[in-house]
Image 1 (cartoon, helix red, strand yellow):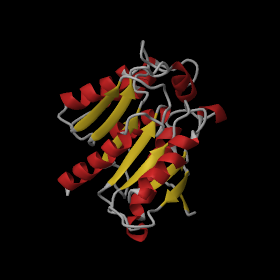
Image 2 (cartoon, one colour):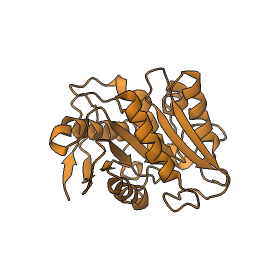
Image 3 (tube, rainbow, N blue to C red):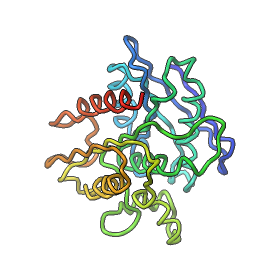
Image 4 (cartoon, rainbow, N blue to C red):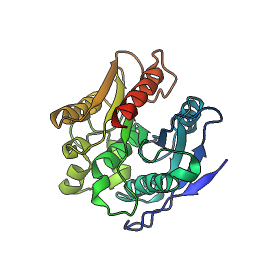
Length: 252
């Protein structure tokens, strides 16, 4: 299985994430997705990485799973964000060789990986690059969005920002506060029974997207614990595949 190494020359933390490729064996849609597994910034959940990659590749969407740096290894923001953007940069830079449409590359994450995806979606323009760092779309599964307050996930924020982050850092890490008109279209889903990351996180981000006129779909399901991935009684995956097709065709 092919791997790439991401690069972000303007990064400040020497990002060099390993990016594992899952390329469709059959017909390709031209779309691709960079996948950021969850794990509270302390681990990388395989079912939210390889599990998704195999699912999307089987549907004709090239998939790239990022091994980004973790807080439990002593890394802090912006190391994780720079890893995500470095991964997106190398995928887009090699789009021709990989058989991808460079204007149909999305970013995806679950839980803390969803937070990292949301950060890439709102902060891509803070880095200069010879290759566009803007994701063409975003997919967030039960994402962490709030960095403080009753809906925040304390463990993720501790691993990401340390024990005593400044208010400025926490503000920066509340992704909903930084949505703008240039934020890419997004697909989000969450469950009402999520006791780890309340569904208000997805609602906060969706509300910000709506306020700025950014296209989005938000799917809320009553039942289901946190971290389900694809093991759901509802078929969010089929809805997501439909949405990717619609949003990429609309942008063409």
